[in-house]
Length: 126
Image 1: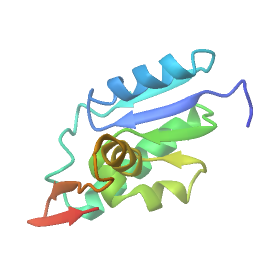
Image 2: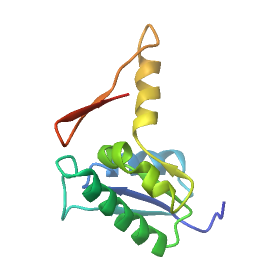
Image 3: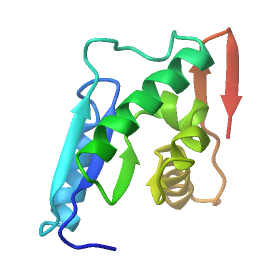
Image 4: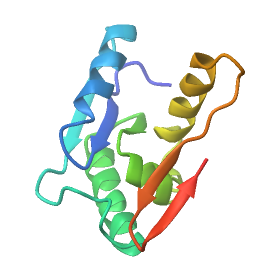
């Protein structure tokens, strides 16, 4: 990976800044570009097609900034459109798998369940 290119991070709002903070903590010599889509927050009540469109728009914005990878700091995009984003650039990191791993590590019995309320009155369970 090119060390001179930044890492792109996007979220539907400002919550992803906590994710960015941890990246800076563990990878302080990297450059970063952050996009918080506060104009259209929240994404959770939008249709899958709309979330995918927003995710593609955010990804294209970050690609125009020359990022070498993308961190999707939005749970809704991670659940609905991570595959869509990963078609444009790899690597792409979402939030659900890392959160699940952290939850499992934090349990005594090594089992955990994560649930995200989704639009369309469905629940996704991981």
